[in-house]
Length: 297
Image 1 (cartoon, rainbow, N blue to C red):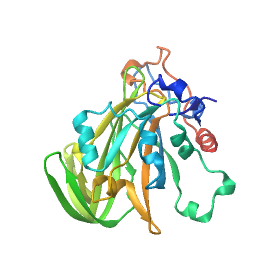
Image 2 (cartoon, one colour):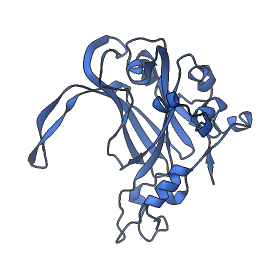
Image 3 (tube, one colour):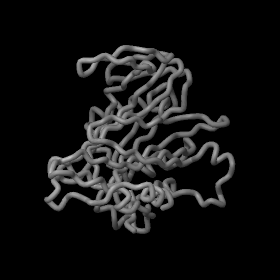
């Protein structure tokens, strides 16, 4: 079975010798269905997501982890905005630094205590994304009241939000060379559920939902190969920042921080370069048995 770990550059492979790896699911569990009639069809892009809860003072949140993270893939102006809003992000690739690999590994069943189950330190989920279609990844527990100060690089604005919960919007697009272009942005849903009329395709439909506040200036994009992962976490001292609202929490008086790790589980072949007879089509489809096997591994 192939194993994935998550480093910064190939040059670090030798330096990171002995780092733990992570099992990868079988290819059959991730393979999309074949195109039909020789026509290109959209392929589902599967990403694995880990949400890791650590004590706010854990060294993995500081330089111990970020020595292995490539932050230079993000524009300098964006990195500055992220830092001003209490966020930090970058890419890691094979092999995983020990400080991160041990957080990603599941705890032995014998060590799972009732409090850990109620507040799991590690949550693993799968996102099956259609190309260019937005999905949501729940971040902040809600609903709750919060005040968020937003820095745009020159000014600071802020507002209180009631019945608020934070999510990260995730959009994936395949790239011709097999990588996946991942876009992630924080989004706050707040207020009472409202009904509004929305027009599309020459018709109106009634929609219900909360008001939405998008932090567009904190949208980050990165192209990931199947041996790389995007890491996002809160950063800096505690305050009323976006990072605090989305990735920090208090449980029984203890301050915790969340680390999000998002990695593609298969190559993102652009469907425009795929046809039924070009050898790129795969004849295996997802099945319930495949997913059950994926969950056991």
